[in-house]
Length: 441
Ligand code: GUN
Ligand code: ZN
Image 1 (cartoon, rainbow, N blue to C red):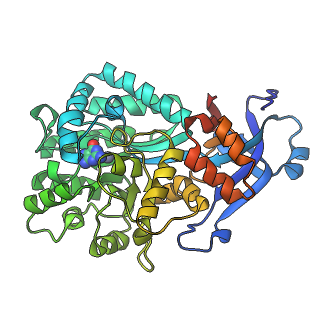
Image 2: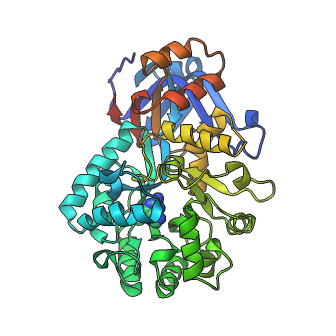
């Protein structure tokens, strides 16, 4: 399948079919949004893509460079997970509850272990290894209330030179005492972590109030002040995931117009702010997210697992007020590290809303779309000269039944659809981060 010729460790090239997006197909005709090359070469140097093009054109220029040839494979920009909780790795597939009971019975128990740095280190290692097995090359991560848990994931990601966005969860009410910070300590600890990690290598800090119900007004004010001090940091939280949660927010913030208004009042809706779920957002909320430039992380495996509902992507991309949408696994409420499986479930959510979308739309969402939702599209999410060299290589025949089904595929769209419906971690042949292979099947 692949023949590596390792004459030079410095510069590296790979060869295979290539698919990459440069525009949003939810806003423009699909044909204008992507490039597909049946036989491409990608050259990587010091973590950056330095050449991309048809193999027959580039080959003559690459006489002294190692080329790894992925025959019958598809090269993609690395997948991006826009919303994931690494401390919940051990509670994936915890039975039987919806959001609030699930948080109390499973999540808030597991997260208490992360005050112990060595435990956090161990989970961070396992978590990132699993992401690499799934072709995930960048992610936006919730840690726990303990700064140790943030240190653990940034430290482990730096070992792989991985682009990682992460933050300390802020919560000062409605959770077990052992998991609470205060308005002041949330501000102080988050600020210290920003100073230490934001912009260090490929790390970016994310200001992370867990969600409105677990922060007092004082804490939201402090977190909003911190966000204003650091206008280029990301912000992440949850919004409008579950109907009981929405009622709870209404009773805790009776003066707010709606859930989005709670965050808006504290300056937390802006460009580079991304909110998980948004399953039940109203027209007014979608409009205010659009106006403020905030994004939604669509997490379908989680939404179906917790019985939260089916996010309406078509409504989110509404004409004249489209919002940025990324894909997220939301582990451990999400049930798979696989972005292919996340696309599969996102397709089903779209079906339930009466608006199925094409496989090309799904692959855009998982790569360039998620990069746009994080305002990272100048760095990651596409394969082009100058972009960071994060790649996922898909084996298009990863199981006997996929291999069989692929014999009957006669278009790119159909082949991609088969991959996203039937593929999983087994479809990932290799993962490159900053030009280096971090995983090979
Ligand atoms: N809302 C607040 N915290 C969480 C969490 O950990 N997971 C999910 N799915 N929703 C949340
Ligand atoms: Zn979440």
